[in-house]
Length: 200
Length: 277
Image (cartoon, rainbow over all chains, first blue to last red; front, side, top):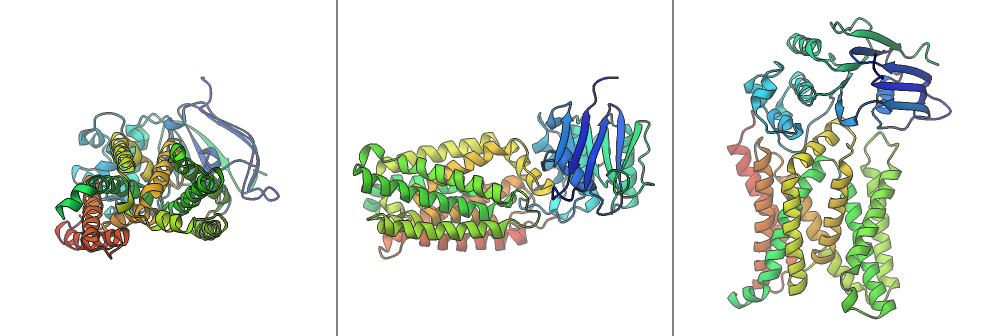
């Protein structure tokens, strides 16, 4: 087994030092594995993600990524996410893609159709937006996908398409979920981190 | 009119070209929800430039060799305002705009105080705040023309990277590592623009076209930027020409008025022509 993709040691995090949301957390993310971060609302799942992604400093402990930051792709929950600039879904994929862009590169992942690629971001549905972000991550050869409640508020079609794309991708994943039953179908090694009960 | 045009050809070209660059930069700043923060930075640049002018005129009593040093001081002040603003809002999870508004009014008051404390700054305050293309010297116009071409080249070369950065900032709620380069570039362009073209001209070119045309250019990103650039550039030229023709009209307010009219008309027509899918 190679070096872990992510190594977290004695991590404490939260808004206030005197009242951390999580304390003394240690875990790793290995190659070809899925780490589920689970817990009820308010247990600090999204705050932990922010610390892992480097958006917020931890109160204590260390977070060490064994890969370049650009190989980590974050897919947020997408609430209230209109964009000031007018862009199509294809535009968004094109500007994030390092090489010469053709729509066929996106189509091969099967998450979006040619017609959907021509939709404006601001008029696309939540499912289409999420599928665009996932296509973006897959196109950029991400080593780790960080998914914040990936199936939340999605219709059946989007759930199936995302499930299928995740099943076929080689990236390791960190999946935040408030529902223990919401497990992705995958042959990857599964780890679970339960917040809000035993982590302090 | 033709003789006036011959005299003011360089300021006209410099103002129009810089307006084009500002309008594209403004699209990215608005997309990153940095409008209020940009006003803070612009006001800090105003304060820094006035401080620089006051220092050169009042204390050092020299002028020619230090002509461009207020830009550097303006840039440093805007950098300080940016850093202080970012530090202030680092733990804020709600809208950051009220914090930036508080910093903005503080800087505005400091600017007013400075103009009273340091002698002879009242005229400069009006010049730096409202701007006047007609008073731009040929040498400064040439500097601004070159700077505007460099700004445009930079915006074109890094167009993909900047758009991707704007999207990530807006949707993911945080700036990626590459944002530092964009922020420094924006700070310098704003400080330069405030020094030579004024705060009002800078802020108007940054935010009026992209805001007015937000829903008036369909879903094509390039069409949005090109339309913003055309509105900003043509408004700067037309407004300047109008103020030259009617001497009592102040240059920059006329440019702003023309920009509002052209932008609104373009948005009105655009909404009917480009219906988003």
